[in-house]
Image (cartoon, rainbow, N blue to C red; front, top):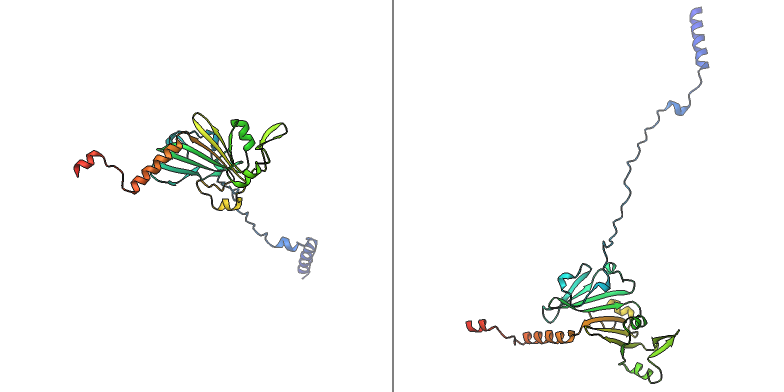
Length: 243
């Protein structure tokens, strides 16, 4: 009996000397699964891999030698020989900071006319670049204005177009091409954005380069179209002999 009491006393003493465990130590630590690492998000921007310059366009260039990746076929008019391409990707254009549209005119697959619509007036710059120009004023308001004012005025020692003129054309005659610049400040710029045609006269600033024989070629295209519509196209002699 004494031995039993001694053994119980020893167990109690041992338990009393053992430090109590914290409640959280008694519980098994939860296993935290590390979330799977996702790769960094990659943003694929629709950016052009190249740009072209407006100044790289050349009249009388064959259509097969021109990079038309930024252009869209606008259509064929009168005959299949006359076709127009219009700028479809403005971000491909290096000069998009002052040009917002370009039209290319082809006759018999040759580039015969280049037309650019500008964002801002470049009259003074073009006069400095191309030299003396002929100016054409056709509407009544501007004609009356010129009865009392000059076409050219001097500002900071330089000749500039009178800013009061709001509708006029500048034209430069060259041996191999014609250059024309139309200024139409009377145009409604908001309506222009909604109704831009391939040759929209309502655009405010339009720069045109065309071959010397462009008007003659266009007259021929229209004549051929007229003959075809009237059934006046002559058949080859070989076809007539078969009938």
